[in-house]
Image 1 (cartoon, rainbow, N blue to C red):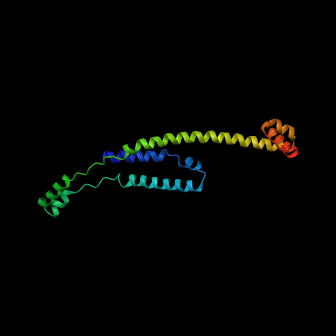
Image 2: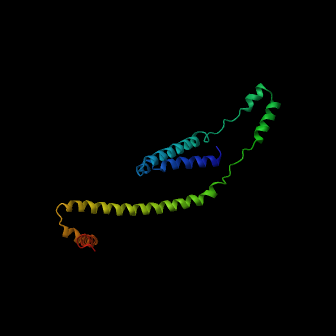
Image 3: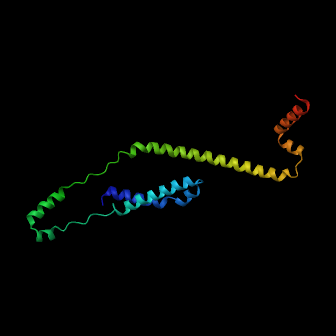
Length: 168
């Protein structure tokens, strides 16, 4: 196995072990997101499996002596020379450098969106707790107690009563 392919295979294998797929799946809220997530996971596993199996195998060495006995050394030597002269080009990654900055920028945006989402979740949880507390108190709360807690509603209520009763 060439050094580059082995490195890529090792990195992909380690990456697959360090990904918390179940933890990420728990964070998804919509069925469409879950569908896309499982599709991504399946594609990742397929690529990783291919890297582990197909590209991790070295070709079996040719037993030139076996062929020399059956065919003759002159013809086998010609084939051996041609075989040895084959040079498999190394893959040069020209795509990753182009997309790496974009990917890094997306990660930054993702972290910012995550922070905003957490802040919004905290705000909504606090609001839910306030509404639940208010719901408990409403059964025993008087109008004066309610308006004392929400003075902006008291003014609006007074204005509407004044308009309905006095007409201004």
